Amino acid sequence: MPPVTEREARKVAEEARESEWRKPSFAKELFLGRFRLDLIHPHPEPSAEQVTRGEEFLAELRHFLETRVDPQQIERESQIPDEVVQGLRDIGALGMKVDVEYGGLGLSQYYYNKALVLIGALNPALGALVSAHQSIGVPQPVKLFGTEEQKRQFLPRAARGVTAFLLTEPDVGSDPARLATSAVPTADGSAYVLDGVKLWTTNGVVADLVVVMARVPKSEGHKGGITAFVVQADAPGITVENRNAFMGLRGIENGVTRFHQVRVPAENRIGPEGSGLKIALTTLNTGRLSLPAMCAGGAKWSLKVAREWSAEREQWGRPIAGHEAIAGKIAFIAATAFALEAVLDLTGLMADEDRRDIRIEAALAKLYGSEKGWLVADELVQIRGGRGYETAESLAARGERGIPAEQMLRDSRINRIFEGSTEIMHLLIAREAVDAHLAVAGDIIDPDADLKAKGKAAVDAGGFYAKWLPKLVTGPGQKPTAYREFGSLAGHLRYVERASRKLARSTFYGMARWQGRMEHKQGFLGRIVDIGAELFAMSAVCVRAEQLRHRDPDRGAAAYELADLFCGQARVRAEELFGRLWTNTDALDVKVTRQVMDGRHRWLEEGVLDPSTPGAWIAAADPGPTKAKNVHRTVT
Image (tube, rainbow, N blue to C red):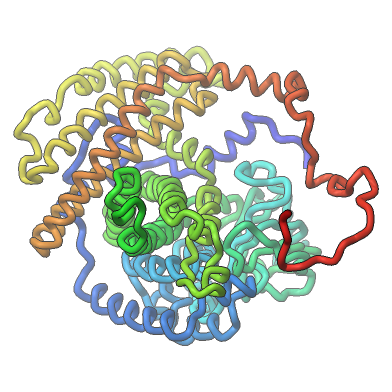
């Protein structure tokens, strides 16, 4: 495939994103300096029917996981046993998101998330199998974009089997403009012929059906473009060439899949030609919630382990929890676990209500959950010390409780990369956050816009900012009585409102300063997004605590304490990020990176051996006679 220019890549991405906002968005308003608490408060609630159906399934799932799944067997054998997959199939866990009329359980997003919290905390590889199948595999895109015939053909099969989503290629990661897998229409138009290679195909090794993104060439009668297809996984011409192995998720079925002259019926195409990326991005709006669900599960489990170990382990005459250094870590884990669940529950329930556009909220939940979940796992290992670094199998072999803290750390690391890396999520969210600005002023900085378009944009922008900027000076957050129904948390909500306006002003200042170069200021944009994520999490935490206070006063009082702690921690992080918007080493980072790439600092690489280079581990001199290995070594 010929090289793709930056402008061409941007055009593909812009055409794929949803350009209109048909429903209100709390997070979008937050980035614009408008704190619309009414969009999330009172906290959404599941319907009685959803509760009954969801709680019944969670009880059955919990029993299955407790009695039929050995998480350490999966870790030890690097494979999920067939009987476990069959058991999930038997209880309907593979059809949680498939509607009842198509043979599934028809669970809400909220309860689907709860199920993933259970599964993911027990074994993240098992959680990856279930979530990759239902969040981004065949069920979701067919449910959202499939015809009635496609739903009746594929969804009952998806409710009983395993499916996968195939987008990434060896030379294509987060830049779909370079996608090379082709889907050439047959002469009679009855089918497409697929050729290409897909990498990191989670579930692709064991899937029954797969969704494949392939490029249809533009020709007479064919619009062409990246298009989505449902493909039978055992169709002639499909080969799985490798089962990949990773740092974590050792039971994951992830491989390299090759398509050679694979014939796919035209009726298996999802949506029109050229709509594949839009389908993928829309699917991910809610599909991304599977990752923060497993991050929340990991954080809740980490709190349990940290609490039990810190009460049991003593140092200098007292339990380690009594030392401030450890207390700070436990407090961080507790506050963060509460926050991750609050963000997850709020976003999941908003997805169920379908009254708001949650594309930014879901992306923030994924970003925040993966980043904070990783920090929680790291702190747990630190609290456990040497036992945190030791494997569960080794601990059990010498008579201790086999706590897989190091496994949690390894398994959670991928979440910062899965379904959009942190860096890509920063850019994706930033693009949505500045959408209102680009809508009125985009032509001013667009190199392709003519003078007439630039002139009109200047007039439109002047009118927009004349009305918008004055509103960012004062607001409810200045009044000590604002949000007083939240009691001791009112001050935190006032901070969110003020910080929201400050965030919007900062974004405007950045656009005024850098204009067309703004998209390359990824350090600045990343901090803008991270501030928004902290404010969103604070909002979710406060609303969640208030909901619990009304539902259960005792638990609500405890929730208020956790919310107060989390908001205090989040405010410190947000203020640091605000300071780093303008005081940072971004320019110097870029300068030194260019020097590194030019070879100026290759001298710094001297004095080491490269373990990836063949022969690097062979000693230069003859090591002498080989000695027999022994378990014990004698030191004299």
